[in-house]
Image 1: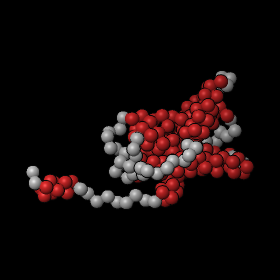
Image 2: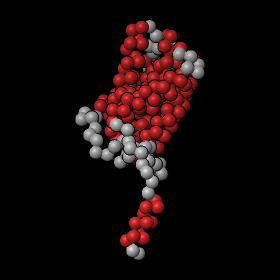
Image 3: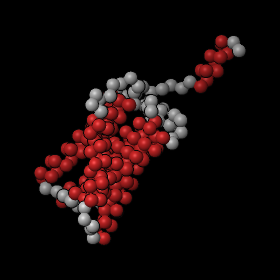
Image 4: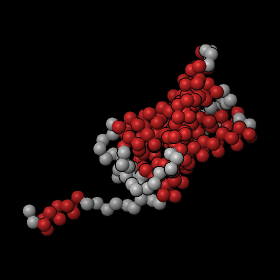
Length: 212
C-alpha cells in the first residue's frame, strides 16, 4: 500500500477534538455541578435538614463539605489531563478516605436502636445512594471529554466526588442532625459506598469509556 493511500485511510477516521477546558475552570465547575444536581434533588422533598440546623451548625457543616468537594475536584480535574501533577499530599486518599472508612463502622458499635430509627437510616441511605447515581451519571458524561490514564482511578475519584455531592444533598433534606450513628452510617456511608461503586464502574467499564 502506498503512503498516500495509507494517509487517506487514516484521515477518514480522524475527527476534530474540542480542546479541554482549563484546569481552573474544571476545578471550579466540578463541585458546582455536583452541588447543583444534589441541591435540586434535595429540593424535591424540601430542605428539612437546613431548617433543622442552627446557624452555627450550618456554618460548620456546609463549608466543610464544600471544602471536601473542592479538594476532590482538584484531584479529578488533574486526572483528566495526563502530565498534570497531583496534590503532593494526596489529601483525597491519604486523609479523606481513611477517615471515612474509620467513621463508617463506628455506628455499628453503638447500642441497638429502635426499629423506626433503623428504618429511617436505611431509607436515608437508599435515597443518598440514588442521589449519588444521578450525580455520578451527570459528572461522568462531561468528564469523559478528558483523558484518564487509569479507569479504576477515574471511577473511584469521580465516585467519591459524586458521593460527596450526595452527602451534601442529605445534609440539606435529612431532618436528623447531631446523631453520630445516623450521619456515620446513612450519610458518610454513602460516600464510602460511592467510592467502591466508582472503582467497580471503572474496573469493568469498556476500554476507552473514560476517554473522549
